[in-house]
Length: 180
Image 1 (cartoon, rainbow, N blue to C red):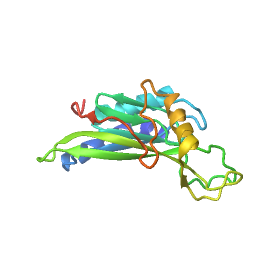
Image 2: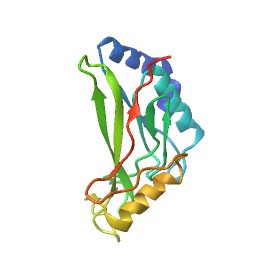
Image 3: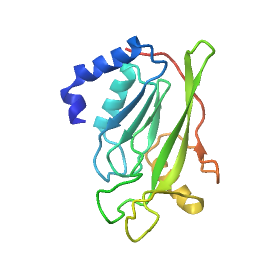
């Protein structure tokens, strides 16, 4: 959050350079939010909205170390926090659930970005519950449902449920325009 706030023009120039180089889609990654807060905060929303105005087609957030929800704003999915995947910051597991966001980007025959679909895949940052062995594992069953429920509590629309062996495929989000 601090870097973006202090270097907005530099970040804006990066978006412009990507567009000038002919990027067909831009995925923005934002680092912000309150650690271990179960819900997003206003600065995360402002950062995501700003990235969308600059031309981001997908926004993925991290930093809070826990799963937070998502939005779809102007044809752009925003995932506010995926939680910890492989986290070496402490030996104890403080948050047992996380998500992988697998993005499937769709393009027309002419290379035009048409939209995307996200698959939220539940994981745990450790294969051990009592200590962090730094070996993430895929989750299934009730534990996978808990990971999706963590995202749902901070999402204003119903998320697609987890399906064993598939993940939680969210509906296709069509592109609706770019830039400011």
